[in-house]
Amino acid sequence: MAATPSSLQRLHLIATGGSIMHNLALALHQRGAQVTGSDDEIFEPAKSRLASAGLLPAQEGWFPEKITADLDAVIVGMHARPDNPELLRAQELGLRVYSFPEFIYEASRDKQRIVIGGSHGKTSITSLILHVLRYHGRKFDYAVGAQLEGFELMVQLTDDAPIIIIEGDEYLSSPIDRRPKFHLYQHHIGVISGISWDHINVFPTEEIYREQFRIFAEMTPKAGVLIYDQDDEQVQLVTVPSSPAVKYIGYGPHEHVIRNGKTFLLNKKEEEVPVQVFGEHNLRNISAAKEVCKQLGIKGKEFYEALGTFKGAARRLELVKEGPNSVVYKDFAHAPSKLKATATAFKKQFPQRRLVACLELHTFSSLNPAFLPQYAHTFDAPDVAVVYFNPQVLAHKRLPALPPEAVQQAFQRPDLRVFTDSRELAAFLHEQNWQHANLLMMTSGTFDGLDLNQLAAEVTQ
Image (cartoon, rainbow, N blue to C red; front, side, top):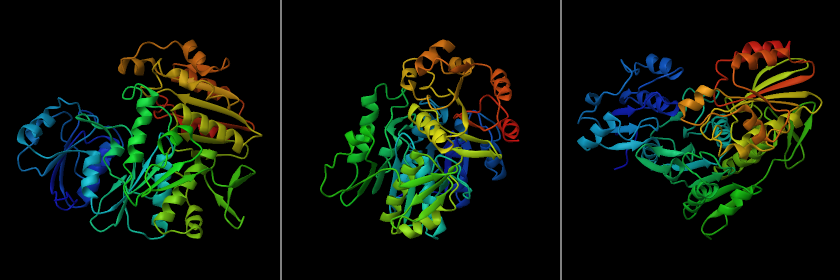
């Protein structure tokens, strides 16, 4: 019997403080389930959100006594370790143990599953689709990896929605399941937005990484649809049409014009449709979302109508502040392909303005000396290019020390500025001349607490 959200009433989440896991806890709580959880560290905003719902654990840590035989299931997050005492207790009791993707699949067995995969763009494509569906009053469930404007949670599971839109992360499913998440959802409609080697700690070679997407592509069922970026060379290697029963749809960047720092799409009638996002990567994301929506019965005119109010996914090329001669944006970009796409798009959107761009190396891959050469010439577009990293993060990830000159050499940009102290970085940025200049801050971290709002106010005054 499928594990519908309403059939599982007593659930315990191991590593409940994670970004997606605490959203799942809140979604299940809203459905009326009895939800408990544990974690050894819980940060904001998860802490406050769980507390307001009465779901915040009384103490941080792992408590195997919480795992009792009357639980319907245990859901384990990626943050837990294989020897987690609560996980071991659940296994000892023979309880059903789900990873996040396993649970989402079980809860959506009877729905049409649309899974958005790719090294980059998947959050933006997913959020575009959700925005269009909601604009037109369609019923849908979803699981997405970022907080979206207008959506209270990152997960929604109901019994009556006929479809579910899932952001298909290629990272591991759980500490005891080494399969990529997007292999477990069993999509009916799949998207591959682009492939660029990432997660070197899990996929040590580019070939092993690419293989995960080939498997995903070949999982497309009979009468299923695979939508893919037709210009991405790595994608072309894995999306070769191999089944006459599958519909293959390639896409490229949407036709457009740029005028005075604003982007306008061109529809079939060559009419201009203003949008609030920009850059070739976002124009490709729009094309992907349009193809998915077409499969779901939303025609071009309806799609463009909804698109006009789409502001973008949180932290994905997000406007912080705009002034008469300057703008400040922040972006989640950290992988080489995302860095190059974002910086290039920004310079193209505002060609008359000087661009100061800062990247924080924060992930395991980005700080790994074996991976750093992937950044060669990806940061050539900005007029002033800055890289920041915290040596303590290297120590925490058990990586070797990283000399600033090695970073400069890897990026192959002699004038690259490299900082390892956030106060020195802030001082450098405050000293810049911001007349007819823009600032772009890119990280999956926080630049160690740098006050971006205060900086943005100075830049745009």
